[in-house]
Image 1: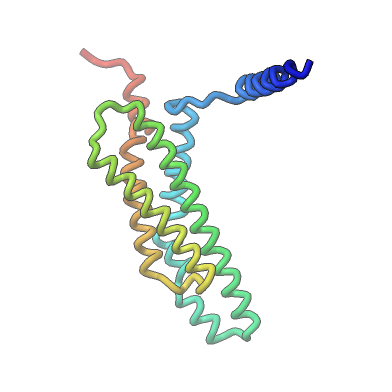
Image 2: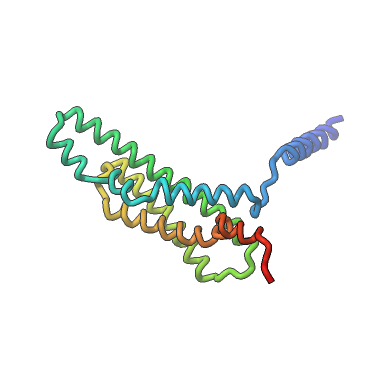
Length: 188
């Protein structure tokens, strides 16, 4: 009877693993969900996170100087705390959308046969540097505030813009004009 216990335990574990694998939603890398997610991340970066006016306003020292000149101390502290929260939220959103684009590129690279290894390594390096910059900027803003590293903010935004341009080229076939051209009958 004691010899039967290990076999039953292995059977229960295998059955549990089978149930887990059956309930799991399969994800194919080239699925339309991945393409739509990447397009949404790209649009969010280009239209919502990276416009230079927005970045300039979040990290503008002029706002701090104005508040310091015209407001009492408690208002200055509240302003700085709020601006820190906004800057940290911006950095986290940039990082999240960048990771989404990176997942798309990793999945798409498996299916594209004409990859240029040097450009793919450059893109991987761009993604790595962007995510590293986001982490460093997040730590810096958390410790010293949003006005501590304006050049680093600019470099991070430029790196994100570079990644967006490359991603836009990879996602170009999703644009409505090209899809319309594909569905229209050809002449000749």
